[in-house]
Amino acid sequence: MNSPAQQDRPVLRGDNAARGRFDAISWLLPALAGAANVFAFAPFRLWPLQILALAWLFNGVIAAPVPLGRSSTRAYFLRGWLYGFGWSAAGVHWLYISMHDYGGMPSWMAALAVGLLALYLGLYAGAATALAGWLRTRWSSSQPVLGLLMLPALWTLAEWMRGWVFTGFPWLISGYAHTTGPLAGFAAVGGVYGVGWVAALIAGALALLWQGLRRKGAGSVRIALPLGVAATLCLAGLGLRQVQWTSPQGQPITVRLLQGNIPQEMKFSNDALVSTLGMYEQMISAEPADLIATPETAIPLLPQQLPPDYLARIARFAQNSGSHLALGIPLSDGPQMYANSVLGFGPEAGSAAMPYRYDKHHLVPFGEFIPPGFRWFVDMMNIPLGDMTRGDPVQSPFGVKDQWVLPNICYEDLFGEEIASQLRGAYRAGQPQASVLLNLSNIAWFGNSIALPQHLQISQMRTLETGRPMLRATNTGATAVIVPGGGLDELAPYTRGVLSAKVQGYAGQTPYILLGNKLVVGLAVLMLLLAWGRNKAARIRH
Image (cartoon, rainbow, N blue to C red):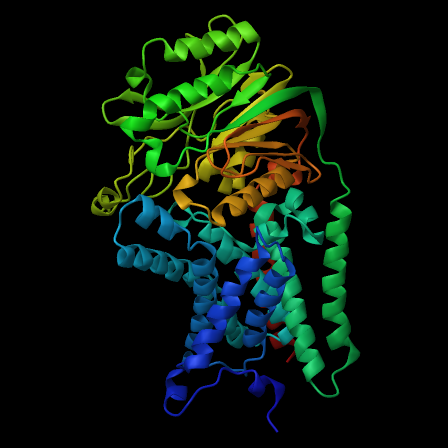
């Protein structure tokens, strides 16, 4: 009878075994397991699936016989790569809509671009599994060391690198699946990567549990240890959710978040511009509020291209009504210099002449800046204002009565470290620290797809990390108010309307604000050092 380790090995046939090639099933299963991850995230939110799918991936590495040869290391790289490919392809397939339906790219080329992106993102998962197998052989590590130290650490480092290499694309990384459930409490401590690390620890524990249950005569420790790790982490997460890292600051403010629901194909149409400008002016001036926010580039023209007195009329309304307005609009500081910006008008004298300004800092590759050698690709997609200038990494918040509102624009919401860095910098410099976060977005580029609820879930993670409310003013959805503690008020997507609410600002520092990603990266490196140290100690004893 085959041993459990042999039973879990990838099925290889004939001469292919020597070269470590997968057969058809072995190619398909990792991709399907990775694709199943999409159901762990919004709008499905079946978060246990993320842990179970990752446990399946880890189990294949843990069950591998030792020592691994080159062919086996290559096989486990392919296993992880295909897993990451399936995960990314299923999770961000909606990019096809922006490139084909709105960008005018041929269908085959748009599908190929999505596939190539998914293959690239899968490399991070493949590198984690291959390196884990290689280090296990080199360090002669036991299964518990592999499952509880090495695999979670390498998985976390791979996800962290995915968040910044080539400007980063951390959409749908593991931690985002856990904005609800017991692991959400870790967000305020370690951020989204910290949540992903804990999920990877539980996945490693479940893989070890499976190995213990399959092994005849396995000792109680092999079963009790992984069960204890998983249970302890879940209970710790539930306990952390009870900690109030931040507290209310000042008086609540009234907010009106506008959702124009302008179809993307009409947004930059000359025929629709007049009606768009009139609609937003009417929505803004319909009723006063402490803060009125429009979506990203709600006004799709530069100020000098607008009708005379348009911005002046809006500024007068803000001043006469006692309102503060955050207006999404592109700005230009010179020839061929365009910024994706927020203009802030308030009731203060001089606000119209010198409004608050926030410029988007973290730009979208191809959509807002052109990587070297890809001008042809951007030209094919016909993206207006496709090459923009960056704002400063740290920008001051917008004062609204007792609160300080810090904007971020669309894609910037993915980078929790950058938002935490702004809060941390203001705190250490003794400057006004934001008590409310504000996201202005237009993801009509992705149609009526799961991109909308996925982006909303990303904003929920930012609230968990910072202990501050997040306001979202979007073109087609999801326009929402997210408050610390998990409360959510959302406007129906793909409708024209206004979400009105009273929002309490919060002050204080979460561990994630103070430490950012340094804590989880340091812990991951420490886990690898512990794994190496156990190997060195074992060699000394022998």
